Length: 187
Image (cartoon, rainbow, N blue to C red; front, side, top):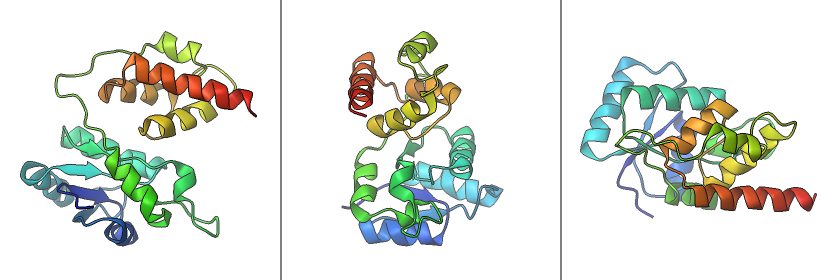
């Protein structure tokens, strides 16, 4: 699988995992304090080939993603669920621990934010009705929804924003919520 865009990852081990799974070039941020030089390289890459941000599903990874999106609009996003990035020994989390097939799958399901700005399709009320905010199981349901829709794990406010950014349709949302409800009944 050849990837045209340049993939932004956090470190060397992530680059190794990406190159093991696909043919691609990477830019490493080397932590969540992204330098101006790194942002310039990412902006240049976006102009020339496009960029896919593929960071770890944790707070530093979400922070890096937000900084890049703020400075370089229009970058694409790939996400992996937390469970797929846990080290075999259970100590550590990151793209570098994911298996090749999960990495390829995440890169097949890349999201590009809408260029026309965000149109609210899914409302806060929809999120409440779906028990994704304001419910004891909300966090767990958001994690599962993020995996089903390939949009990553978020808090309630970020979920609302991410559904809009990636223009998730009412149909896609409803289908995913039905899957959550069915899984909940099987527990």
